[in-house]
Length: 143
Image (cartoon, rainbow, N blue to C red):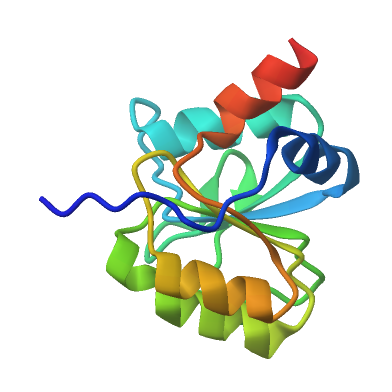
């Protein structure tokens, strides 16, 4: 198993700012299975007031929200992508974010690091978080 150290990452103040500013979060790889981390994290974020947009290859509804097959299909602004995919999927996700032009935050969940993709996202003007759980980080800040 390859294990990279994130060389591009938001600091604690930037993460706090992200949570204060973000409203809509596209969760890429959001499983309908309540035992999966992606579901638990998205459910938590939804419960604390964020609009969750599931992106998953099947299902019609997850967490009561319409499921989209890709980031490109979402017909309204997306503030943040919260990624539950393998590191090699991150470069194409950056491409999708850049095509949209509205994604402000590129967040790769705990255990997910791709420094090349992170650099590209940062160069495109996005804030980047890698190898951090958004649920854990939010809870650490807001309790």
